[in-house]
Length: 305
Length: 305
Image (tube, rainbow over all chains, first blue to last red; front, side, top):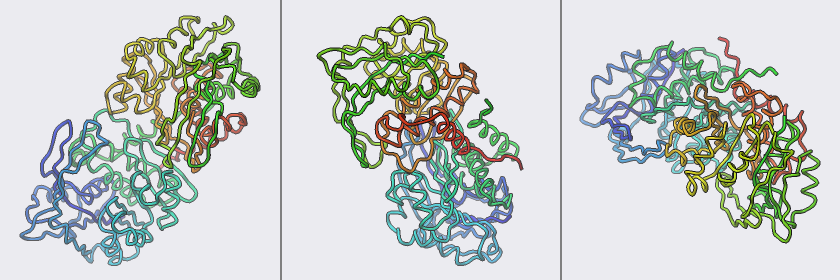
């Protein structure tokens, strides 16, 4: 099924204890689209870049069959840039710089060919823009949204309003706590459900992810990687794998939502093994499926006794 | 099968945002024994208290069929006392006071009736004492050990020596990182295996537990509790459930170790629902088994497609 993805497109400069990259392809829309492209087609990207955006990145998106009719290229302006540094404990990250550039005035316009998209993934952008996107399209089958501390703190009312139009909210554990002022993650998820989305996924980094609905709780561990090179984009890649799987199967039953959480975790586990989106360049459906099976073994045992 | 448990016996004063208790029964040996007593018998306790130790606590241990021949009662001295305060975010705890009292000079003597115990659980005490205990008993089938930041920092060489005699080390995530100077938990576990124990269990509090051997990694989520009243003793209760299940079944195959991790998590989930050991007074094997099944559902889905 068709999938519409909106979010940032960035050039990331990242330092980790294991190396560094400068102006590498990044941004939430990129990670989500690239991950989802392993599952479904068409993936339709909405974003904005400057005219300094390297042609090779466009070629990469095209090679993944990602539709870029909705990627605005603003002449005479620069692409959004982000710089960050990870410590030896990769859970600790400093933002070194944020140059919004074209992203500052991002006004997403949905091409007419995108308006009937069945699945929609709203990457982490201003909740007002997220809502503006939803107003431009026909009612999709499923809307997945992301957000971040910045919007929770600066635009809580707008965010709450936008959340009413989301079926699934994907946040990390600290965001869930901040959004609800509730340290217990299950209680936090249930409070979020009261605000709007009927499904909440809490990402817990190295501790996996938990899906909560009014009736169900499902926990998936993270894949036990010994060599993590760059955690950038793992959360967006999770979201892309999650909604990509749902769009592929067009099945939003609870059982398939659980499977989608494991597929999201699977894609994220590949993402962090290399810098930037490198590992999302070279996957195959078979590789993904093999790791999905390994994931299932991770929390499975023979329960007969 | 027989299980020998060594550790602290304490009177705990605990404040949480949901209430408080003063001089409640606590200590690692108590939590471990009480949890294990739901699975196996005899459970043999080794510990020390003062003559101020309330008779009702002795009666509780006896009611759980815990053998207290190895519980020294020192006349004219006071029982070990600990005081702690949990914040609204229960992951944050301040120690308010530690009065070692009789525990300061604890010199564990193993009664002759205990010497053939098949399973041994060494609660968090001085690694030199842990080793002294092992010297007093016949080679058991399985030795499970715990430790803490204090011993990792003050007696690293003694701890490393003691770890050579452990089959299983149970530590929490920050202890695993401190012990190995390695932020990646899987790498940390593998480094611990190089020191001695062939099985490492990393407890991650609200994020569950991971079992690592040279060949296997198994992750169990934590039970998603909305109402946690008192996290005190959860880790020891986990250890008690884990080794209690192994002693009950006398099966240390990898598959049964995984099952034991889930039983440990199950017992720990009951522990935190009430203050002190309250919830470990009133369990039944059936209640435990029902939650074990609920635990399995937590990370399970139908994988046919």
